[in-house]
Length: 100
Image 1 (spheres, rainbow, N blue to C red):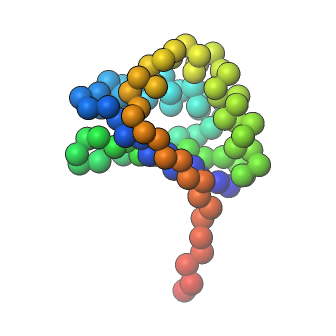
Image 2 (cartoon, rainbow, N blue to C red):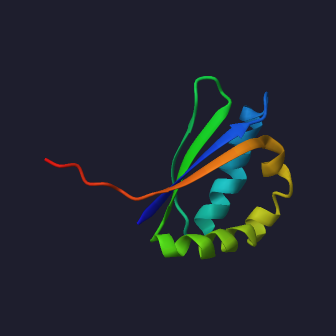
C-alpha cells in the first residue's frame, strides 16, 4: 500500500471555495475510481491544503492518476482546480515500522 501526501498552496482568499470543490467534486471523483481519500487538513494560516490518498501499491499510481485525469468526474471540473492552486507538492509514502 502507498499513501500519497499532496500539499497545495491555495490562492489567497480561495480556501473556502477550494474545500467545497474538493468535497463535492475532487474527492467523489477519486472514490468513484477506487482511490480512497484518507484525510485532509487546512493549516492555521488557511493557505495550505494537505490531503492523503491511497493506492494499492506504487506501481498502481501512474495508471490510477491517468484514469482520474481522464475521468468524467475530473473533466467536469474544468479549470477550477488549477484556478485555486498556486503551488503543489506530492510525495509517495510507504509506512515504516517502529522498533519496539
